[in-house]
Length: 117
Image (cartoon, rainbow, N blue to C red; front, side, top):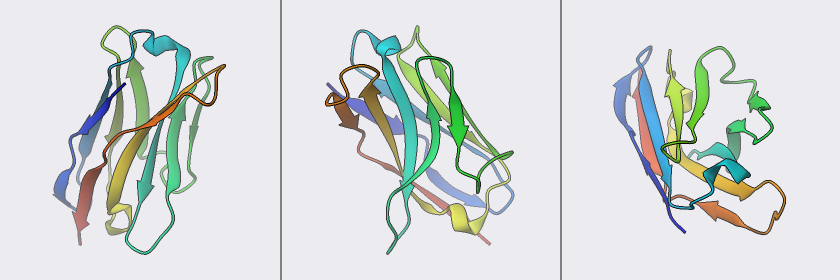
């Protein structure tokens, strides 16, 4: 089982990036998919989540700026990040957790987002 994240990079404050995460598991639709981030010296935090039942949630700090979406046909989730701020600088990780069998929990390798002021 693999999660492959991509799309990170260097962007100026106010700019946009779109992260992608491809999941190798065949039955993608059975998994809750999330994006987390970890800034240097800080704990990993939830950024956005897309559950199998259609529930979507966002961290307060990104509401109105970030959008999570999933394409079940392509086994891929996305994180569209607009109006980026320097405090969004972090390594972003995608996570997949089975909606029923919670021990089936997988992490991607992380992609670095750097927002310059």
